[in-house]
Structures are given as structure tokens and as C-alpha cells.
Image 1 (tube, rainbow, N blue to C red):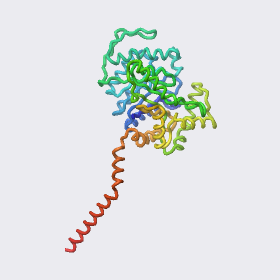
Image 2: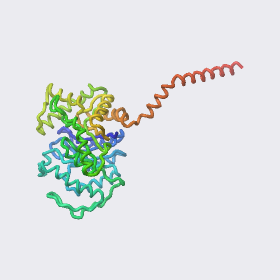
Image 3: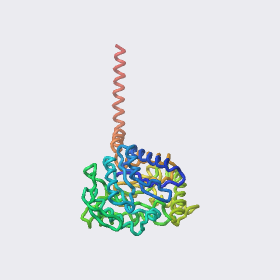
Length: 390
């Protein structure tokens, strides 16, 4: 299994935006040092919480400070961009990062962004599909002409080619509707699924749609089959918040206040979602979300067990993206990533199999080895005594 980090990012308004950008770049450097495979960066233009307006610029800066981690737009909102320019920027980032770039795309979710740009919410899915229909052949080096109600291309071609022979990977984000999964399957690109809403359950006992993960995969599989392609679960990425601490109780304590603040001030006061935000109801909704698997939080052993349950409920996936939601303090997030990389990831990567097997073997033969060591030591003592006697 592969592992990555995902930042929207969602930072409470009021903090210095420049320092937040620097902190997010530091998270990318940390993820690279801890051997995470991917780092995804979002795009937002309003509401004050999402402070990265151009994930491409962020990636260009962060890539120069890292060695091996692969960066991705998480996501580039295609209706906001002319598809030719989106393809051009993707190809240039592929070159600048020497193949460490994934073009993650989606239809967008922040209505205030769409309002400022004069884009109807009802048109975003159509525009996303139309954009991909020209971006993909452009990335393959083809010449494209197309006319839609919001863009035109005439004999368009990219000057650059991919850094590697495999080309630029493209992924589509999917939430509750089957649109993203079916689009990914039809176009033969990678799907990315949100396991649960980032705000958690509106109230305790309210569904999180976790039971729909297997159904999401079937949408992708059916669309791929209709297009004459074979779906591969290794291409499927799942995204949800993960926080590792010394215990479940400690992890929840580190997350709860930040989760509650974001829930009230972003999702309710800014976005207008009707949810419990205070008192017993909010706490119950939070704990229910964790218990149901919408947030993975606890000790390393708790997190390993939760990922195993996610594997079972989804019927298998290739990459888990840890959503860094700015709920815990920065130093607690750093420690969480360190604990995850050292104690959780090796279970699924099998990276510690050799040392564990060596330890098991040595422990199983410890009596034999100790006996041999004792015999050799006794013989050496006898020889030394005999030499002194002579």
C-alpha cells in the first residue's frame, strides 16, 4: 500500500497567510523525510479558510525542497481554467519535478468560488468532463481542436513532452455522487474517493456513506468495462483524516477542540450546514464519526486496525491519503506523521519484515546460542588457567 498526505489546506482565518504557506511547505518537507509517497495540495479562492489559490505554484516551490515525494494538485478545479493552460501547467510541473507530479482534477465544491467566476454550479460537472476530453489527448502529445460554449481550441498542441515514458498521471476526485468515479473509469484515469465528509456526522447515528465505498468502486469498474478497460484497485486512492498519538483517548483530546472550531466556524457559520456545534451533541457526533471510521485516530495499533477495517469495507484500494485538517497543534501533527511513518506504514508496506523475522529467528534459537557461548567461554577460561599453571 502507498501512503500520502493531503492538505486542502483549511486554516482558521486570522493567522498570517505567509506563515501558513511556509508551514504547509514544511509539512511537505517532513512528509518527504518520513518516506510518504505523495503530497496533495488543494485550490481555493474564497471563504478565508483555504489559503492556497494555486497548488501548481506551491508544488513548484515545495518540489525544490524535497527529494523523492510525488506532488499532486488536490484538486485543480477544471471549470476555473482553460483546458489548454491547465495541460500546459501540468506538463511544465512534470518537467520541473522530473516526473514527480500527478494532475488531480475535480469539478469544485466551494460555491462562492463559482459565484465570483460566474460559473453555474449546475454546469461544473459538464465542464469538467469537457475539459478532460481535451486535456488527456494534449498530455499524450496529440493535436486537438474543440469548440465548447466556454472554450475553443484550434490545432492545439503542447510544446513539452512528459519527463518519463509513462507520462503524466491524471486522477479525478469523487465524493458522494458517482460522477467522478464514472468519469475516471470512462477516461482510464485514477479515481480518488473521499471516505467521509470532512465535517463528520451531522449528529450521532447519522450516516457517513462509508458503506458506499464498495459501490463507488463498482461505478468505476462498470465505466471502465464499458470503455474496454480493466479497472485496477492499485489505482484507487482513499482520503480521510488520520491522527496517531499514544492512545485513542489522547488522540481524541488533541483533535476535538480544533475539529469543533472548524465544524462551527467553517461548515456551519461560513458554509451554512445545519449541524450540532456545541455541548453533548457535538461531542457525540465527533466520537460517532471516529467509531464509524470517518476519522482514524488513536495509538499506532488502533490505526492499523482501522486501516484493516477500511480495506475490508472498501474491498481493497492502493493508496491511503492522510487528510491534514489543522485540528491538532502543528507539533502534534508532526508527531502523528512520525508515529504513522515509523509504526503504521511498515505494517502495510512490509518494510520491517526482515528485521522482525531476524528478531524472531534469534529469539527462537537463544537457548542454543547461549549454550554455545557458555561452552566457548568455559573452554577459554580453562585454557587460560592451564597456561598460567604452566
